[in-house]
Image (cartoon, rainbow, N blue to C red; front, top):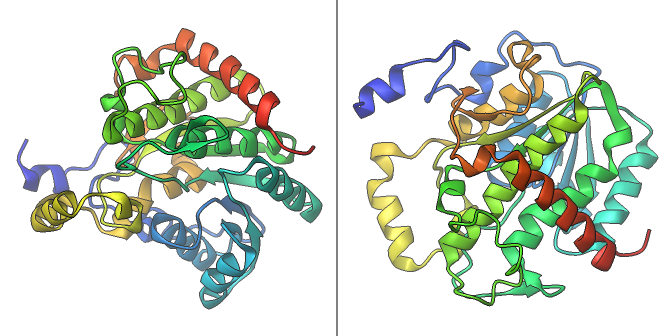
Length: 309
């Protein structure tokens, strides 16, 4: 498929590669809805917040400190509620969960948007590889802590990535979650993104019969500060070929926003979404036995390092 046909072709939803978050919400009145976005202070999270506020939603936005969240959200106007959330620190996650609960409002959509990518060298948190712990365990603890806060038809949107296809052959190396064996920046990032996808699949299975939805999203390749850990060669290559295939931030935020609020996504659950349409994932990304094992392993990790209740 040529680049031109990829960019111009829309899928069954009526949207596609070049659709923006503004386009997928055009005409929607989200007044009265509460959308929680992790990592709302930059990149896709900030763009999602901007557009959702523009459509009338109240955005509960997190950043690593409440000051960063407040500073990012204040210029957007509308109704915003800044919350501190450091995904790598269980005590911070639990405090953030408590702060959201204290707001006393139903969450209509929760977008797990924050993350880190491609750390060049092995780093650990609480004995576990940092990308896995931050991208997956932190969000697992946060999302599961707020399940009772979801509205009756609430939606959970987990940012995965096409990079989930770069995960190790085993998918999730449950015997190597410290990352000490054969660490690779992109392989290990891929494992964390596969974990995000499997978490969404298993959460959707557990939602069966409740009216609540959970999906995973591949936003596309976008030049945001998520890539701050790339080598200079990787960044220069990305920026050199960027005009050929990089999405804008508006295009990158489209699928997570569509999944969170669009009526056309109201019956979609347990899926991997790309370009505002259902997309095939890798075989490992559909392995529900692996998803169940990951859920159980993550519960064990949370029990060990979960922080103060």
